[in-house]
Amino acid sequence: MFTFAAEKYKIMFSKACEYGIKASIYITGQSLHDRKVSLKDVAKAIESPEAYTSKILQQLVRNNIIHSDKGPTGGFSIEKNGFEKITLSSIVSAIDGNALYIDCGLGLKKCNEKKPCPVHNQFKSIRENLKSMLETTTLKSLAMDLEKGLTFLKR
Amino acid sequence: MFTFAAEKYKIMFSKACEYGIKASIYITGQSLHDRKVSLKDVAKAIESPEAYTSKILQQLVRNNIIHSDKGPTGGFSIEKNGFEKITLSSIVSAIDGNALYIDCGLGLKKCNEKKPCPVHNQFKSIRENLKSMLETTTLKSLAMDLEKGLTFLKR
DNA sequence: ATAATAATGGACAAATATGTCCGATATTCA
DNA sequence: TGAATATCGGACATATTTGTCCATTATTAT
Image 1 (cartoon, chains in turn blue, cyan, brown, green):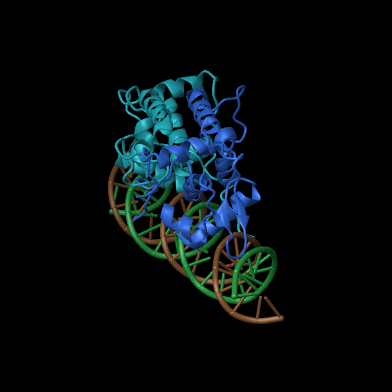
Image 2: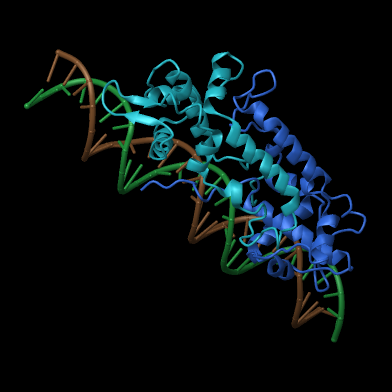
């Protein structure tokens, strides 16, 4: 039988982006204590496939969101003055792109205020809320909740 | 080079679901005038691939959202007393499932109020808004905006 | 210098979503 | 009853996303 996305379709973020967010939060937490972390550490902490996680971390490095050092004593870290400014929004843009901010909910390329799709106005405020939430939520605040045991990265 | 979802990842709904929503709105509009529409009509109206659209309409038929009749004079329609009650929510559930309503934003299976993921609370109100918007927006209202020329289904 | 370590980058593989083809089934009308 | 029409359903094809493997490059410590 033909099978549908039903019961499976991943909403909001791609899997890569989920991993990227979790990894960034974990790295931030360790960087708060001046600890670099290896790819292996990250993958274990967020329960993600190591090789795939590697690609995602590279992408975050290229976008200047996290920092990497090669060789022994190397690893991933986030600059101290960075994680107060780095928001979920930066990570999402780096991995999933900006479709969330600009694309039409029904996939219409020319949908806009003047020629809106049928759900344009219904989506407008929701998108704005989502956008502003992503732009105001910093890695630091998320990492600190994690440290306090208020939130969890696994399962 | 390794390529990412970036600039491409489809947010909110799957393509199938987008087609499903657009198709339902179009069929509702025609049903308002007691007109059945063929698969071909629908695909033309919403600019979607015909065969794929067929699968999606079947799925909506199975979920009792739209009605179909075989043979000449057949086609798709929505019961008059239906489209005041049918909401975007029904269509999304039928095609993309309920992940939007229940799944964790970071893909954690055991994320909940007591053991929340780092973004759980940030997402909570946004999800609730989205959910209630989908549950209160009826096909009829969307189809009427379309008829009035306030909204558009193409491009 | 050399060995060990860790990230990098390219090619490949698997899974899922999207899209196509075509025969089967049901219905209408002549 | 038979031809025409329209949906239904299964198998197949393509594209995208997710995941793996392995050789290369850079760095550190011996």
